[in-house]
Image (cartoon, rainbow, N blue to C red; front, side, top):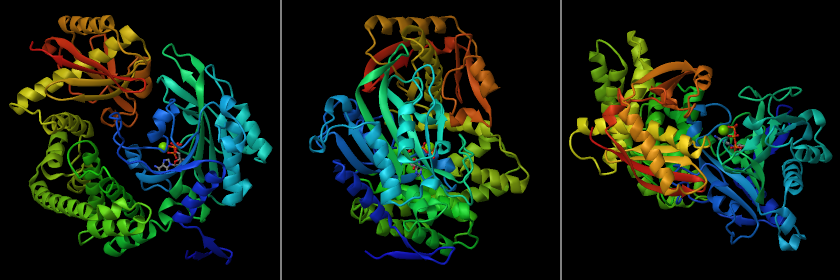
Length: 611
Ligand code: ATP
Ligand code: MG
């Protein structure tokens, strides 16, 4: 294979590692430690409606982490395609991508009962996992120890300080002052509140800054310290009562970002400098009149992610729902940033061709689906360009701006809010984001409804039903907590004109009595005709008042302020709205189905009646 050369600051010729060499090195290393190499699963998860995309290497392995026997044995290694839509807003910084590849190795099973000699390929635990991580980083990759730091779990009332991991790092030669201890927010796997497997993790960081590395701090202020790898030790089972019991099957689950690690390995301070991005980045720069680094990075990332989603074996095209909506957003955002840096020609197709040619030796599905990818991208780009032009004409006629108008521009002409904001600034208008977001949220429910093919009758009638179900969902959420316990947390919600659907954490099937009780509570709250109102509160105030819901909800959050809906005194929940004015408008409430959707997650479908 051709080596890439680069001259370092000191004038020495450095040999750069390619992504392909690095990927193979990782797989081969763990193969030599008794692991079976397993292929990347689809980006679009099978049988898991709770998430749109595969977000980590462990994701397709969940059934095996929970006890299913894997045909590859107890030691597995993979390079998994991942999409993290939650990171879209971070993209443009040095280390976050929407699409990235995650290298990972796993041990399935309790090491105490399966440990054996190498030939039995039994499970392993902290000692082996950390030793191999260390060996791979320092021996295989040759990263200097004095640029590494690690973090371990500091311990709390649920679980003790992870002295075991820290001790292993120390014995390997990581100095004590480079071993840091943090709490659950940083060094714990398993979302708080959820029941099921969880445990401490130990993370590895590499110093990319200049000079003597400063202390590693928690939060976003790591400046120069890059997290490259995470070893998770699934050790406990969190019960519905909130107890942390030792897990029957202990697992090791590790994840290392390929692009990030490759970048630091080659001496770069950002992921976009690696060879897999370079041709995409230069193409964008060559097409732009006014290239700006951040915009160029965002375009490169978004087109690559869109190509991988469309080119997946279960690929999807741009649309208004689900995965397709993410694809649409990625493409349109890329085009939008293209306009910002004055790209004259169509940009999407040549970039997609570059992505396919770079990546299809490892991901042949991209080449196989190339015609589909190119055709759909072209259609989407043309459609968006025409709409943008019309929209700009409409914009020129505007005499004022508000959230409603911003939303109309979005809906009719596909104007992203950022574009409206920027154009508004030029004209001296101000956009009300909350108003825009409320309209947006309402629309999302409606578009889900229409795309489900269940859209009957007039828009007004249906949207009224949707609003009723919105409020009923809040009552249901609280009633479930009353009946089942405070471990109940919303895991997903979807409303169409026919029914509401609510996914929540709970370890067991609900009994008929529990279902009846929940229905009774919701109906009694409807009969009390409670008033509904919202308040904008700081996150702290909201927590103090006992508000539940997703504190990170993009539609309900502005700066540090969150929108909290109050249904009488009964329910307080973070939400963008909209809701009925008083609960009597809901009429009545009935649960039509209660079922499992994933381990520890139940789903309720319910309908509301005429008032
Ligand atoms: P960060 O705090 O930097 O967002 P994370 O804690 O979300 O990282 P993990 O969920 O532990 O990361 O994922 C394991 C590894 O995957 C990380 O150590 C990192 O190398 C890589 N990784 C995570 N998110 C991204 C991303 N958006 N782009 C590129 N690599 C990523
Ligand atoms: Mg992250």
